[in-house]
Amino acid sequence: MKFDTKLIHGGMSEDPTTGAVSMPIYRASTFHQKVLGGQPDWEYSRTGNPTRAAVEQLIADIEQGTAGFAFASGSAAIHTVFSLFKAGDHFVVGNDVYGGTFRLINKVLKKFGLTFTTVDMTDLKQVEAAIQDDTVAIYFETPTNPLLKISDIAAVSAIAKQHGLKTIVDNTFATPYNQNPLALGADIVVHSATKYLGGHSDLVAGFAVTNDDQLAEEIAFLQNSIGAVLGPDDSWLLQRGMKTLGARMRVHHENAAAIVNLLKHDDRVAKVYYPGDPDFDGYEIAKKQMTHFGAMISFELRDGLDPKKFVEGLKIVSLAESLGGVESLIEIPSVMTHGSIPREIRLASGIKDELIRLSVGLEDETDLIEDVQQGLNQL
Ligand SMILES: *Cc1c(COP(=O)(O)O)cnc(C)c1O
Image (cartoon, rainbow, N blue to C red; front, side, top):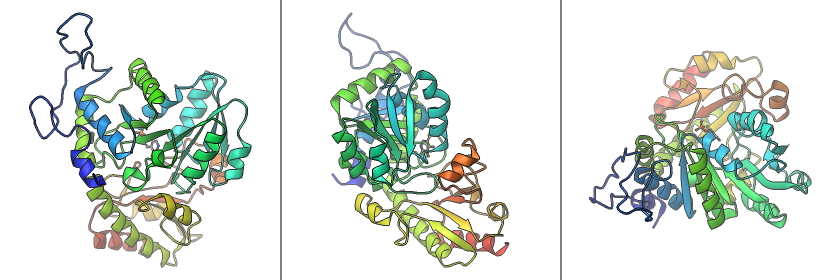
């Protein structure tokens, strides 16, 4: 089955008991057990719920994994995955991971004795040099948020395998439409399904996916033990959004290409960060491991032009955190999504105070172009 067909017919596309073509929302917390001590398919909805199972099978199918797990948020998925490990375990982590992941690592996981070394994941020598005797896994995003840096998933996974480490990739920005880390050698993929997978800015959800039976068993155990599961209503809404992922991504990509073209040729724009731009540092690796380049664009205005005035002057593109929805969203990471990262650490990883991040939505291309242009004209 091709990707778009999997989105519609993969997973558990209809209700096995009634044939309903839309999987019903099973709101039950518990299920009648016909015999005492049997092995019922369903017993309690934290452990397993049919509506959640449908969306979990769907993400497993489209990420080329064997098991998927749905959580109450991307952060909950990431936390559960880190719970596979124990005090004293060391991780090599990308130096510009999502701000919330940075906070989870530094303010929560470190309290429990996990240790971390952050590296520039685009530099394989740095990755290798950071590995210690107690290292257990490498964790990173590609493209990263907000600089859209590209790391070579196959190369990092190969280093990890040589040292007996797990590779964990946050695939939120690329989406399974554009990139499948498991097929490139990663062991676990995590997602903030709040973004492109849900796709409509109307829910918060997360996924973990693996193709390793042992890891699948351990994640299932942790999902049930920790209990940060996705409820049946949101599971339904999420699978509803995912059915159109392919159709949406194609328009996201077209609009993004048009906006990149505009920004690259406007002399009020100093720098554009987009993996699909042949002048961009990670372009060659992106071309190798992604089918398309996504619809996240970051850019900097020329010195002296006020990014605050620009983002506030837009009429169609909304000033808001988050990304991957049908509506175009713009933000300034230093004061919004990445505000929780200390300034010197932000600057060291290349995130300037003036950097602007744009999530290109599905509005008409000409309206978006006009809006960005009128925003620039106000400067
Ligand atoms: C948003 C995001 C997360 C966190 O997901 P939530 O659903 O907000 O908890 C993790 N990683 C990336 C790359 C994100 O963009």
